[in-house]
Image (cartoon, rainbow over all chains, first blue to last red; front, top):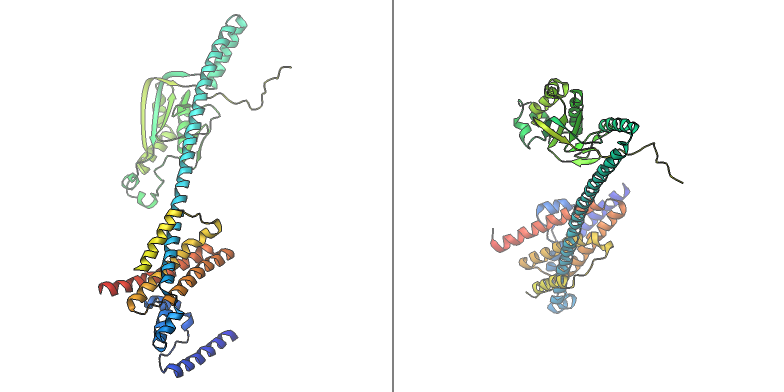
Length: 312
Length: 110
C-alpha cells in the first residue's frame, strides 16, 4: 500500500514538473500501466520516435549526426532480423521432417515385423503338419498306438489344433459408415450419436462369438484366426485384438455348425443385440451360409505349467 | 533502400550458412524474431510519419528483442514459459497489426 501511495505522489510530482516545463500535455496518472489501453487505442508506435522528433528541433544537425548510428546501423539491424528469421524458418523445416521420417520408419518396421512373424507362423504350420504325419505313421504300427492316435485326434480337435471343414455361417460386422448414425434410427440418435458410437467394440465381438457358441457352433474363427477356449478378444485403443493380434474391420466371424445354427443364433440374445446395433447405430451386420467352409488350425497353445523334461 | 538490401542479405546469409542454433537458445529465437519484426514495422511506420530516428530504431530493436527473450526465459524458470511466450506474441502481434494498419493507411489512404 505504501508503495502505491508513493508512486502516485511521484506521478503527481512528475505531472506538475512537466506542466511547468512544456506548458500543457497533461499526463495520465496511470501512464506507466496503460499497456492494454495504449494497444487498443491503436497508438502502438514506440513513443521513443515521437520523443526524438520533439527533441530534434532543439538540437543542431551536427549534434544529431554525432548521436545517431546512421544508415549502417539500421541496415545491420534489418540484416540481423533477416538472419534470425531465415535461421528460425530453417530450424522448423529441419525438425518437421525428422518426426515424419521417424513415423514412417516405425510403420515400416511394424509391417516388416508382422510379415516376419506371419512367415514364421506359416513355417511352423508346415513343420507341425510334418510332425503330425510322422507321429501318425509311428502310432499306426500297434493297436495301443492306434487308440492313442484316436484320443489325440479328439483332444486336438477340442483344442482347435487341427483344421476343420464343414457347412458354416459367416457373420460379417462392420463399423457404421461415417455420418450414418445421424440419419439411421429414429432421430433419437442425434443426441447420443457421438463420433465413435458407430464403431464395433470388442464387447460386441465377444457377444457375437459367445452367441455363436451358444447356438451350437463347433468351431469359430474371426478374420481367419481360429478361436480356442482360451483365446482373448480384447481392445487396445481403437483396435480389436484377437489372440493379441490387431484386426481391422470388417470383422468376419465364421462358425461351423449344423443347419440349425443360423436359426438358433437369430433367436438368441446375441442375435437380438446385433439387430439393435444395426437399427440404432447403423452398424452393418451381414449373415450368410456356406456349404463348405475351411477353418485353419489355431496357433499352438503355449505350455504354462507343463515342462519338457530335459534329457541328461 | 539500403536497409532493405540489408534485410535481403540477412535472409541470404541465413539460408546459405545454415548455422545450427544452440539448443538452449531455441525456445527464445521465435520470440526474438517477433520482437524484431515489431521493431521493424515500428521503424517503417515512423519513417512514413517522417519522424524516423535511427538511434531510437537500433536501441528499440535490440531492447525489444532481448527483453522479449528474457521474459520467456524468466517464464521458463517459473514454469509458465509457454503461457508467457503466448502473452508476448499476443501483445507484439497486436502492435505489429496496428503498425501495419497505420502503414497501409499512409500508403493507400484507405
